[in-house]
Length: 336
Ligand code: UT7
Image (tube, rainbow, N blue to C red; front, top):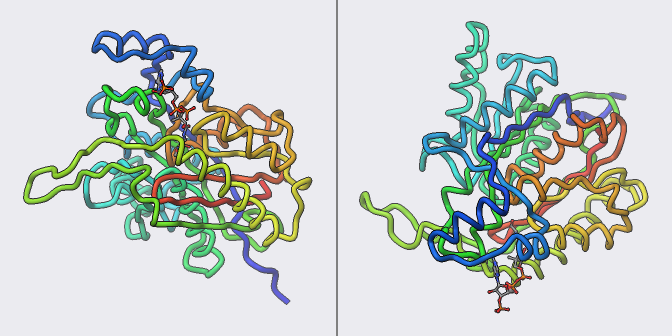
């Protein structure tokens, strides 16, 4: 009897644009435009102390390229070893083609042999802050179905471009960055144990960027709008549900989780989820203080940070979970 195919995580990588703004930097910048906020408010309500913003001209694919290069290096692989590319983003370089295709082109130019990555399927997944969990779920399904052998899965965003810096209720929350993982189809135990992807389109309006392109013009407001409290309430409920669902699918218990690697939107949402899963905060990977909310990039950024710090070890079980606009949410249980 042959063993079932699993998606094993070979390597992780991440990248933050160098320009770092502490809360004090942002508070001073906003004050110049008459927008009043404070380090105390931001820290107390969100846990955020700093975020990184990409310079003008730096695109999502640039951040994705850096994170992907590091993930490939960690996996001991070259671009030509990859036969599937999925990028989770809500801030693509262009309306089309996908950022995944642009990333593929950039990776193909790194060496003569790297051109071997051209021709493999490449596409974006748009599930906002749940995007990376969705992308992992899709990649896992494709690897297990035999459609690909080695997948590059990326979460990358320049959310700073969507912010309305006159709206203090949103502009202090987000940052830019990218994270990536390389997955390989394997008949060895471990890897991705279960995934869950969910959406409820009734809540489209509580977190959205309503603008769109029409006849060469942008119609509607092309900046981020959020009903913070409504998102908060929905998030704490659905994150527990998704986590319990993947544990059930994998036949495991809450006590089997070694690390919670959550979407980094708000420390209070993370604390609530950890409490519901019975996990002490020292089993939770926290980067929200340094990165802010980087949407689809936040989970792979947190994962790579903990892997490179030597906190997450091979064989440990990781609960990844994300929630975002749509409303979308999901979880992935991984044996690293
Ligand atoms: O990544 C996708 C998922 N997104 C999320 O998970 C975000 C979920 N929501 C949240 O994290 C929180 O709802 C926020 C951080 C956005 C807001 O925190 P809150 O505790 O829900 O605050 P609030 O909206 O109830 O606002 C409380 C007060 C208000 O003043 P009044 O009406 O009580 O006088 C706001 O005007 O805080 C005020 N406020 C601010 N004050 C200083 C809102 N933003 C700011 C600010 N600085 N930046």
